[in-house]
Image (cartoon, rainbow, N blue to C red; front, side):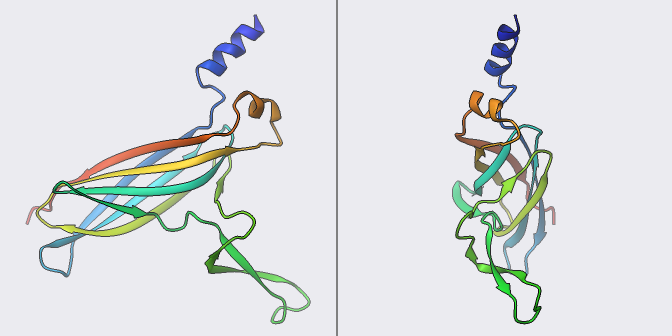
Length: 170
């Protein structure tokens, strides 16, 4: 009977990687005539199952049937530089924004963690704008729960969320 119960839970997706997303935007008049500035804010809320390794986070912005794609900054893990001279004898690590971490370049979200990402783009003032955000990620091995890892091996997952920005009434 227990095997039937856990078989159902597995089939229903109970042990899968879970991620919640919300997207919002703020549209303001630009200093450039005929354009608005659009700020897109994405909130990622990792659920209680598994650890997510973020591979890509992008926004597709559609204005007047024209598609533009934007990568959210901050998805790649930065390298560190050790600064031992200034802080001797302690060793202080400082972030090197220009290089990805050589051993592990992906940001990892552990259970119940939350993060926010944002980006800016410029769009035509008179146009309605459709924004779709996609997150691509992979479940990584959990030493704390190897049985659940075996039941649901790693694979790429994809999550999407969208919003619409209407022209500002002037």
